[in-house]
Length: 197
Image (cartoon, one colour):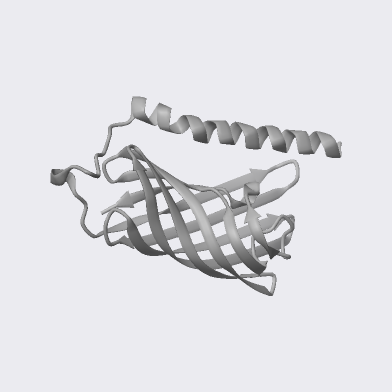
């Protein structure tokens, strides 16, 4: 049973990687291009609002999970910006409830613009609390955005590279993750929308 679970996770990760590799081809075919290099469409400073909302109820296991992660950023130009992501998660199992929160300010650098696909790095620090356990992190989060239309992007954060001490959101609730290195676990993947104003 353990090996079957590992094989299932490997298949899911392989499928996700294939989707990420194929997304620029699909996006080029179905979504309009936004040319960042065009002088008449040159971006100046602008605000970006985004984030993710997730709600899942498992009737068999009698669990409910709610996750909110709003994000706001200020982009100085097409390559640099500052922002912050706040997140709150509530998990309810029967009469037991567990909540966690995190706050992560970041500096964003877009290192590749291949319309409609953009790659970036978010570098910063974060603090979190879960079940009375406080944690922190310092590191980089690689990400990608696909321009769906002018001013609206589908964004993915793909992992974490850095150092953590009991930072919330680990595989086991209430413990968090401690260590350093590259971490591309499923709980690190974040998919959301961003609106540029």
